[in-house]
Length: 113
Image (cartoon, rainbow, N blue to C red):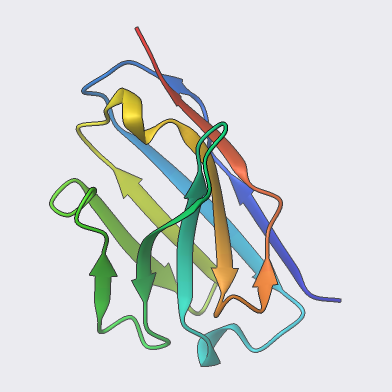
């Protein structure tokens, strides 16, 4: 069955860095755009970043541009989000999704001193 499993969420201080990962299985990963979407407490879903199937093109929300980097490894069915210069407003549950068809359960990122 299709599975997306996020990991790597943690408590980090403002200005710190963190990498979250997403392991995919049960579908042809290399055929899908992959997105990271986040949801802060009491707020709606916010799209964060997208990478195309081959990894050649990446896209970012203005709020994270220049700080976050999305990447993928199609041989390992993995997608990553490297987050630098973290701010308190980056605190959220981070989901990976394959073209909004398949979703993971999320990994919690908390930015606080």
